[in-house]
Length: 249
Image (tube, rainbow, N blue to C red; front, side, top):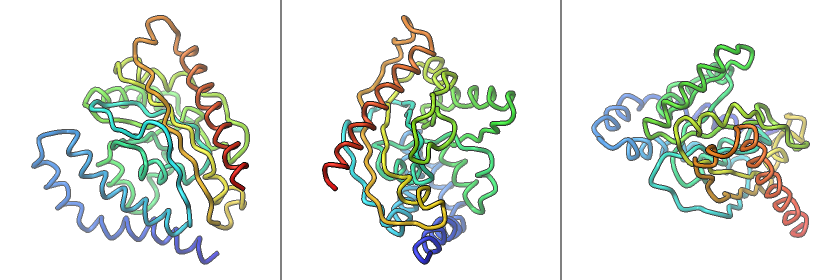
């Protein structure tokens, strides 16, 4: 329980601390003419926040695959295992990104202004019109040269079977004509969800960054086919990560 209190203290406390500097940060950001460098500057603050959370939780992260950044915006597509997916990926993916977040996160103190600077987009899952607006906003962000992350399962698997990917998520990549980078993540649910969200325990977390899927895939395949293809690649990678974890332990 002490580790949990400390970790959640970092989640809110560090965000509160740097929020007092937000106006200065924004002023520096808009002195930079390059969108990519603007995102990199904001991302440094997000990475510090993520690092403190992961250290407090005792998470030991192992990253494999294509860790070199691309000089272009991309759509990261990942399976969604647990609440710690976001800090793990903020800290360890090779380039800055905003992410699609459930609307309820807006209510967490001090996070909203930073998420806006990161180009995050909120989704009200109970409102179909809001879902369509999220797609439109996401396409615009990608066209403006910001990378994005989306979890097409829509909710956490909590260590259970991966849920079916929602094909509509792939419209972001199709319409913006950007590469898809599939991400497999395994082990985050061991930190909290498998403790019934009542405790936080140190855990190994594995991330594998797969090869890019180029936008021309949509010339010969429907979004549903692309969704199934990407999910199969991620599912296979997650299975391999699990096997490697079992061998180590």
